[in-house]
Length: 281
Image (tube, rainbow, N blue to C red; front, side, top):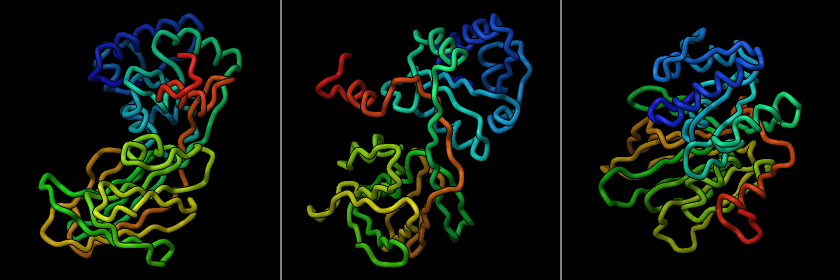
């Protein structure tokens, strides 16, 4: 699977098919990738059906492509091997130039698979019911007008606070290095079983990111009238909220299974991607 909007991803897809063919692997593709890259392969109509028929999903793109594939293949245990063609690439295993080496490592058993929990949001809105999955985060935020919104947050039924600001990020451990980090949230190890609740530009300076258990039930109710407010899953808007409507967020029973090279670690990735002290890159 490749990001069809990136010419480099389509070129790499053709190279990947050639490398896999040399190993006498049976190669399948999703329809958008096959069409855009002009691949003459058996085609599956979507990511979910592709995951159901394969032993490994090779994803060529950036973190956005990885997030989409993780959501679309929820419910399947097929490992996802990401090759980074984006910027940071926290979710990918290697860069494009490392593709041959990574495939060699896969066949030699030099990889490991990490399970990353997905999170889910549900809401009964005037516009209809909403049920969404995310790997990184859910964001409730204002629209284009620069006006504060007020969000009442409860954890397992108990009032936490009312945030006044531009919005709120509810992130999984995987999502702690995404929007939450940019908004001042903590970096969370993927193995930590927690949510991070990070306000966006809060009006109260004492508001900071709050960490709660991953098995908690988080309820966010919009208390503001006449301000456009939206719910987004992994950066994609999925619903508009009205005053009084509530979004319920919890851990999903589904997980994404990401391939990692043996010897790599989350902390190595942090040092390299964020240019922290100690990085050899």
